[in-house]
Image (spheres, rainbow, N blue to C red):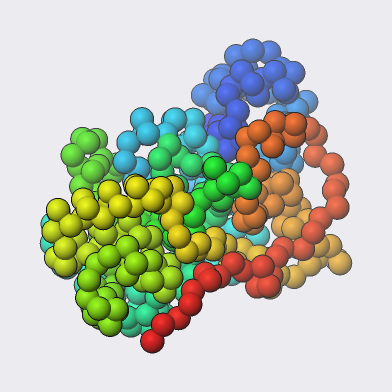
Length: 401
């Protein structure tokens, strides 16, 4: 029987990761109201029947609550403001990330070495941040002055565990944190609903932005004042811009295209760099190529063409591959599919692993109303092997010399 504190901590983490409130969990487990709150605070002992009921709802083995070494330590996510996303949603993503890292450790998946350099320069110096972004590109194995072919794969080469999110965090499409010092990046999946789809260029910028937080703001507590929060966001934006669109390289391209910053020129540059037209307006303003008046003129033209939501030149969505490849390298157990094997070894239901490895576009809210997630007792289900490299989504770039 686990100790009261151990049981309470793990119950709270799994409940938050599942997006359930205390009352919701109590009702689904058919236990007395208030029991969950008491257990999570370590003020109530429970019998094996209650543990079994909670485990069934949360889709874990009952012995998961008693295993040794499942208490992770997480850094604080660098979000602009929790008011921008509900605390419940933030807690869900953070708790789910902690559960994933625990599972990775329990299973013994082979991690990529953490190659993220930590910035120790002046964060007020934008040029120094740009130079540092070049260093991080080099660490990720990216050729100097060339486009990032796949931002998620670059993050994985730097040692990040990149996992999908089924929804956005307010206006945030991503979140980053360290769990037991392992860098974790969460990225929103796109949607089958065109009105809710996430363009690949926005997804790529999100990944680079979260890498920026990991390298620029390591060890810092979440900002309390809005001014500090906005300053860190701008620092991560500047890093992401330099990571995806290195200054010297994009200036050379602009020169080859005639040197004038027009929508036509920016469209051609987007085709090569996988970087949005609006972001290029900001980038050339950063680089001193255009002034505020020129930028405002371009924004008006973009709005007049209704490009604010859908720009020309579609950039494909990306997906992570490390988890699937690591699972495949681990191999099956007694002829058992890899996901089923990981489930048994970790004590977590197979649905957890499918969630961490599923990158296909999510159903829209209207499409999923008929298939609302129901928490039911764990049952052996037919498993599928994790996806392989054949499912990687690459950017449809047309390379220009």
